[in-house]
Structures are given as structure tokens and as C-alpha cells.
Length: 65
Figure 1 (cartoon, rainbow, N blue to C red):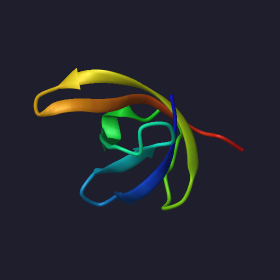
Figure 2 (figure 1 turned 45 degrees about the vertical axis):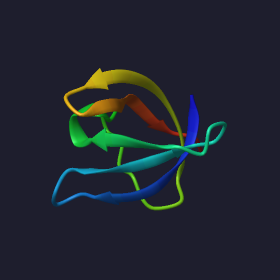
Figure 3 (figure 1 turned 180 degrees about the horizontal axis):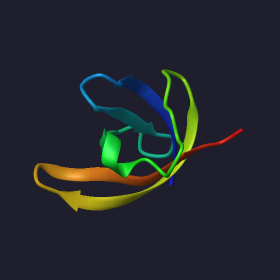
Figure 4 (figure 1 turned 90 degrees about the vertical axis):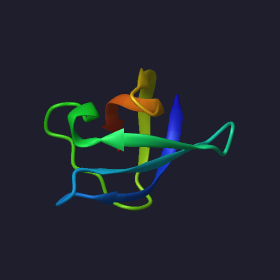
């Protein structure tokens, strides 16, 4: 999946990605980031979706450079 980081709070360890196709927001936890990935608002990312405790969450999140 492709999306844009809506916001990510590094100190709290979570944020949201807006899916480019559906325009829905997907929760992302810091544990869902690929190794070495740092997110900033507006970053273009690729990710997979998985079932989390409270619905869909993004995993294997990588910034597209």
C-alpha cells in the first residue's frame, strides 16, 4: 500500500498514515516501522496492513525516497 504520513509523534511512538487510494487514516505504531525508518509529516511511504487491537494498523512502513 502507498500513503502519506498525516502525523507521527516520535516521543509517544505512534501516528497515522493516510492511504493514497482510500483516503482513510491507518494507525501506525513505532514497532511497525522498518528498521532505521524515521517518519515525518508529509513523508510518502509504503506499508502493509495488519489487524491490530483496535482495527487496522500499518506494518513494515518504509519511506519512499
